[in-house]
Amino acid sequence: MRGRPLRGLVLASLALFPTAARAQAALDSVDRYVRAELTRQRIPGLSVAVLRGDSVLLARGYGFANLEHRVPATDSTRSGATSWWSNWWNGYARFRAYST
Image: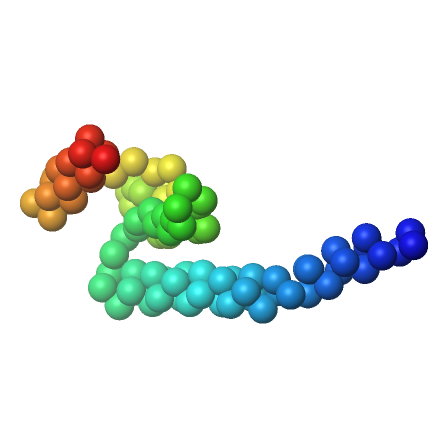
């Protein structure tokens, strides 16, 4: 009788393993893609966040935040957002936040 709760926990963990493994494989794929694009496009550095609902699945910095001083980019590196594209997304996000 005492072993049954543990057995149920083990079975539940095994049932979730394929989903967790697929999620980790997807995050590893994102990581490889970002690293390849940094090299291919000669991007000095950037920060990436992958979210699912309110959960942060991946938050990582790649490359350098400051090339001159060789400061690495982190998941909390702040960068200038001055392009029309980032301004458009910023406005859209604010609209969505206030309209819901």
